[in-house]
Length: 567
Image 1 (cartoon, rainbow, N blue to C red):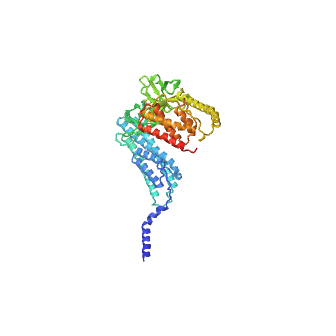
Image 2 (image 1 turned 30 degrees about the vertical axis):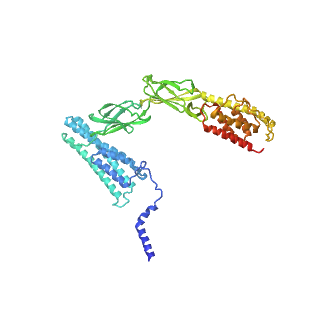
Image 3 (image 1 turned 90 degrees about the horizontal axis):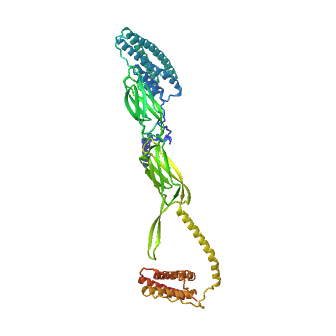
């Protein structure tokens, strides 16, 4: 029973979620196209309906709107099987312009009749008649092209109630309404011939013509002048002119006929080729138009005179001076950056364009520790030029950046001969130290060999005679006397065991160095005792009781260690 309930539960869950399982059948990576790069490709039904809308607009005398919609339709990706449609668009554009011209000629003829200029009015009517015949010929061409389009789209091969067939029928009806408009315009022309005083209503648009002249080169931040003329058939009216650099609007003004406009490229405009677009916006019955020119944005080069030293000692700052100018005019407030190795300094040009700056070589701070006595030490900071070179040429760079955006930055490089006295001195010291080290080793090696052959190892039974040290000329009392007595006590034992007496001119430190190789067991105590004795003899600092006690302990340790060794 439990198994049956479990199976029924699984079946119920699969029934609920099974509609969503289809998503797992999709490919893991669905191919797609960049929307910005994709081109629309209308299906036959949409294409026929759009053309029907174009001719509907023209049939209600919206010629400009029909032109715009047809231009948008031309941007679509037309399938290869109906590429013939490219020849369908050209006569359509021409037909819309022709019908617009018919209305314009009829409007002019009506105005001339009102002003009793019958001869001129009759010429306009004759031109309108010829233009209407041209429109009728164009309509016949478009009708034939429409039939060809229907054959290529296989409109008649499908059922009568198909969407593509209905769209095609709508296109044919739009062409019929456009043909009816042409007949109405022809009837209006005939009525105007019979009754010159009648008032007619037209819906034409005036064409707009634009002439523009602009410099080939401009500079960021500097104004330039653009000249030109906007004209249309009939009287000149005020028109709005827009000027754009690429996609940035620079100015917008209202002009009449000829114009002269000053524009200034933005300071941040990059150098190179740019597009300059001048737009005459639509106004009433006057159509808009535009013209695009190419303009090169550049920056004016500057000049500089710069003086740098021929020879530089790296421990000293490098003095640099100069002057920035263009065509002998000074460039002031420009930023001058001087770079030498890893050092950088900046300066500003004055009103006459001159500048003076000093760049310091890279510096290195070194912490050194100097011992003043046995117990105290002092720390000192030394600043040295950080450069590994000895002598030779090195490069210094000056970058000049003007404040004005129309000037181009300038970089100047100069070579200077540098001398690094610190590195030269360190190199000489290193060579001298190495030479002395080698010389001392060569000189002391034979004497050391002879000493090993002549001096036999010491015997505990036969002690050589000991020469007592010379009596001191001074008597020390107190703590200092205790320390020196302890040292003499330890010294006597060392002399007896090693057989090496302490000569009169020998210092405490020199004697320690001589006997240390023969005192393997008490070298550390005797070394410490020697240092304490030196402090007692030569230091000006006051000694305490603990130091004297320590010296006596060290002397006793030396005695115990040396006398306890087997003979």
